[in-house]
Image 1: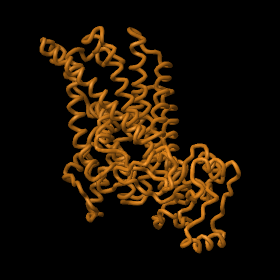
Image 2: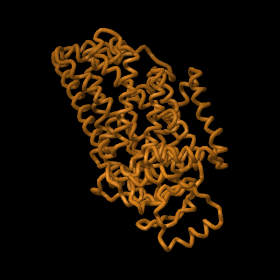
Image 3: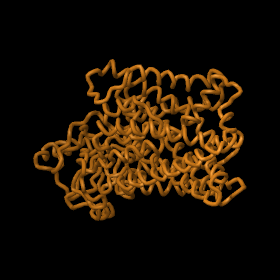
Image 4: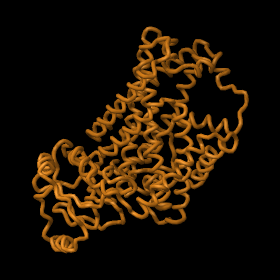
Length: 531
């Protein structure tokens, strides 16, 4: 949904390179593009943060000439106004808080360790994503893959659902969980007050978003730290459970996995909650443009993260079931806290603190990925232009991150984690299946694309079948109104796509809105240039 197509000139002192003056003069004389003349307030604000010879901003790619340091490439059909995107070289030491004369761009600040931490924080693995991520090195994960495989409409519908529902709801769920663990020690023996849980969750969302807006490097370092806290908590739980096992406490474990039968829809619904705990297998694919050496580090991060998370989760659940019965597990609002009271005694406070830190790290990873999806979709013209802008000094997608946070805070108001997970899982697996199908389709339609990593095609077919099962089985066996609402919400994206994306209609007010937020947030348009 593109915004205004008017031209912006926040840096009035800039003069294009002489080689492009003729082109600009012709465009000015033709009257095809009108300028928005900035007032004194605009000039003063921009002059404080950029050199007097700063880069001129345009809001139509066809009106972009050459910039003295980086010549622009030709438009590839994007409806956005953009500057050339120049990725920082590996190991760049430019200060993030200092003004830069270079084009505003995402920088490659995410190393292998940070990549593993992002996946470990909130993930389930898929080797298919390793192939897709090394074949298509744009950020945006499923959005970029569906755009290349199926075209703009499926990609838009994915961004419509993901930006407005999936990514914010995932962050809301994680931060609500954090709120429960933070308030649990205060309300020992009592159910945590829902208002305090939601306030803590909202505060966490605000802090996480602020960190991600300030610095990519700071966000990844915090992710590394909280991943270490997560692994420490897991180690304590695993060791404590192992000690109980060696003492002969096996009565709960012997019956912990027993069941009384289940239908196909029950199994699928159980998988929704179970697989949600692993979700995040694609988080690193959302930030491919910022990943150092993605052709090597992306498959390695997935290969390291998948076994590590799987092993940790299995051992932790064995420890839980060793100490607690199935009924106690289901009744507990914070399972790790209940486990800690029974095993650790006087030092049980360690576990809720560690789990809260773990949840904070998971929320950070979710925010990091969700903001990039919103940014990339806006850069392709599928969302309002302001969401595709980067901060002129920090090179972070501040508008997209803030937008994601506002939606997440709105979603914590109802606070029903169960319903959020059900809605999230149904729509998420619908698009996961479409992504696996995209891999299969591109094997046939684009066989010559470079594939540094190539997954056996049978794996793609298997996970596609699983995705179809997880989407269809609950509906076929036990239709519920929530699934209809989810489907209608996906299709409602057509009401926005047809007028605002396909026919490129725009609202006159969007030009003023874009300039207002551009000044308020100190952001500038960008453009993707492939490696």
